[in-house]
Image (cartoon, rainbow, N blue to C red; front, top):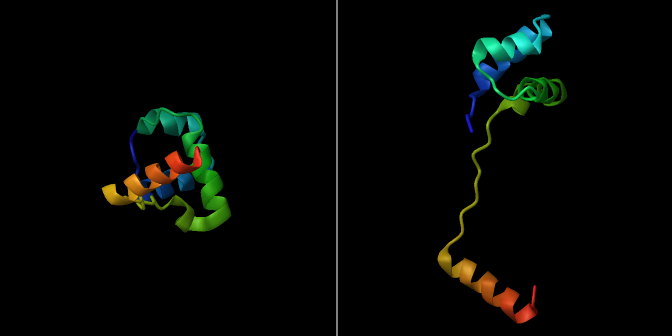
Length: 78
């Protein structure tokens, strides 16, 4: 999955809002998903530039925490 930076997204959103169609922008910039640009436009309209920022907050857990969770699941039959 290709991640696009916020500046790139903003550039395309502004082009779309100026009247250029999403299909032609998708072809011109090599965006495969047809709904990708439209979802960026929605996020921009709802939240502004902050809605286009890529969030890299993937949580990581230690192996001890994972073992505790598995043991809890085993005890509680979840």
